Length: 69
Image (tube, rainbow, N blue to C red; front, side):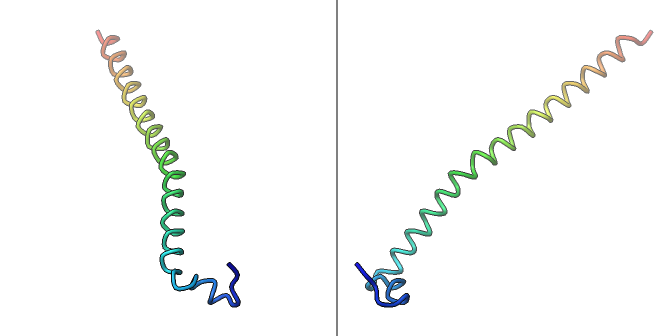
């Protein structure tokens, strides 16, 4: 299918709204699929850093109380 003007291309023979809306939705879904694992990884690593800090703090406290007379 060929279009004579850019406006005709955007209109897509009267179906432009549905065509471009479906492209938009597909782009949002693909973007979500790409970003979600990165966001989850960052969150997971932050949680693990927090757990490690808490464990180290508990170890330091346990070590200091064991050294006390």
